[in-house]
Image (cartoon, rainbow, N blue to C red; front, side, top):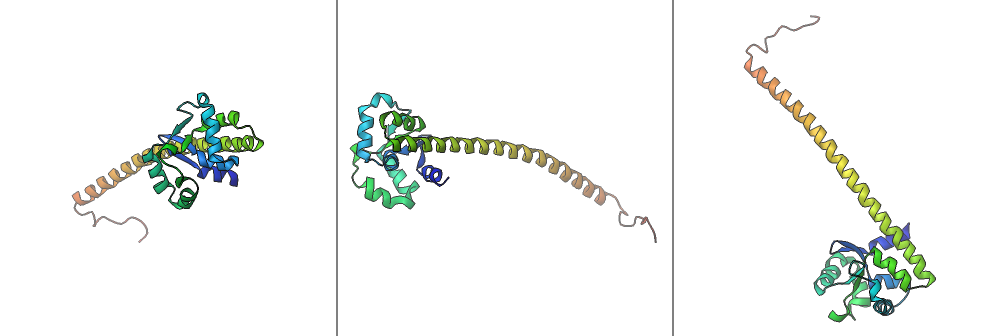
Length: 177
């Protein structure tokens, strides 16, 4: 489970897609980022835009300075330092990561891909569970809001009724005296 958490921390949302950046994948596959990118570029026909895309300079700056603030030393030392505009990170979607298994054929790559796929599935399951819970909570709130509104109206009518009646206080007590 710890391995899944580590992978989950390397998944970011960019352009509305969940992605893992090339240098994180290279670290997990235990290869150099340059080697991973070379293998990808040799097989570009396997990586359409919905499988992999290169970050823009603005996306990279935003990601490295805001989202990854706690991990900034990793970026400054390992990848940010040697990356110019020409070498902006590649972002791989779930399908792109799966396609990497056909490009990188080591036993480590196979095991890492299995873990990454499990993590993406886990994230999707959490998202579905969250959506279902949010819907149920909204239904409960609507139901109870109506009930509280009915009770509030009843109290309002009783209070109005009480102030309209004179002698409300002088009413004869019922019970043992």
